[in-house]
Image 1 (cartoon, one colour):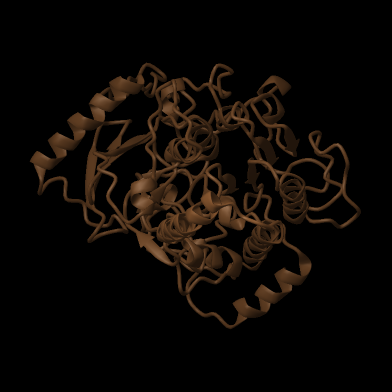
Image 2: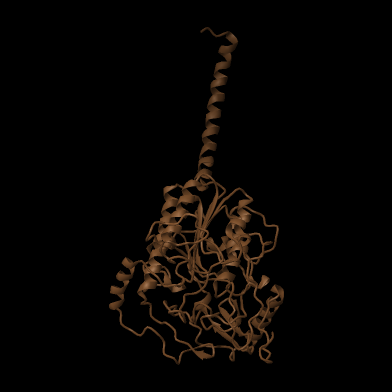
Length: 499
């Protein structure tokens, strides 16, 4: 092809321009590639929440090197994310904590302060109790569903009686097994036939409930891997009735036979005002079998995240709704060195396993001592999904803590104006820094503990530090007013203490 004289003269200029353009592209490209390498994941993460019923802080190997129970999948989750040493439930029993996880609020705001419906009476009448999560609450699932998320719930709900209160009417597209019961009390309980009214298709004979719930959760993840999703697996395990897979029960029976030592504290160890028999040694074979089966179910869901190629874009939370059952109903686990257990405002009743794996934020194997609570799940999910909340909540976004920073929180609070099934006393608590103050609702007595030095709450400092007691007590009482807390009521002409 012949070129004109004009085109021939332009060719060197074109070559120089082409050379300059290539240099510019090569100069810019490394910056763009580096930026992509730092943030290769989509901006809208998925969420998986594992909520275990009645699992104690010391019931997983990640928190307890001498744990009697095997929890390799949970421990692996801890190794791949962040473990919180000072993570809490908002209440020492189940329904209130479940409310806090769903709403980001303290349960005292709506008088949801006991399990639905706990009516046990002690020296005084319990405070007024609301028996459902109010319909006007914007749940975690509703918040995400409005943003286009697929939403799934499996397991224990226990947040209201009547289908209008069930998961499928509170923002979840799918509900497998969630209704008003607080345990697997229908059919053959933990084994099929389950006869659960919210499990439309029953399992083959002998199927195990934790595995069924995990399979359903994994299937949901597989089917929704190409869109943002929330999978909320709320185990019935390890709540009573105490029933384990026979193979695992035999395994732990053999192991228990090799362990010597007293299983229970003597009657002189006082929890509250009355002697209480407390398990001090993990050795219960059936409970151990329940813990391991639950752990295997967790592993099934985590494996599905990997198989579906979404693990790197999924934020995983793992926690419990209250402390381990150590003072009644078979007392299957020990929370030592923590004091008390389910139903108590001592650490054994409210300190929980808390694990978070947030790809791009959490460093594998990291540990945080920042005090956090179940009220914080909602705010953390909202921030991760870039949702600007239009209503007030009590929880905070955990992202600073997940990056190894401090949250700057002034205090955490608890309010339990009831007599628990486990022997727990009605009381409130506040934690400020390392100090925790407990206030008894029958007579107003207070106890002060330095958790950094005394996690077992054995050394009461109230008489030694009256100024700190007064300061923390005023702060607790101000919070009572803020949330409109209710208290014990008169019984047989006797009036309980009032703050």
